[in-house]
Length: 85
Image (cartoon, rainbow, N blue to C red; front, side):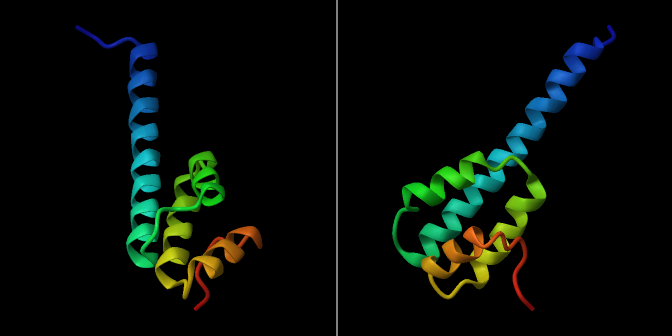
């Protein structure tokens, strides 16, 4: 039995959304673990609104390198998408 094009597209979209949700989860987990508090509502909203895997990956790098949650927030507000090297 061949899978219809529509079903194949749905499956691909579902996988992509699952990957994005995984990045969101990891980012929140890193922030909560590193800074010892639940992610603030403004940051949680920004993370949930972001649907680009590359951007979420960049934000994860920023989270790992940030000295504080405020530094992470400032980088996001400034539009920084990659850790400084």
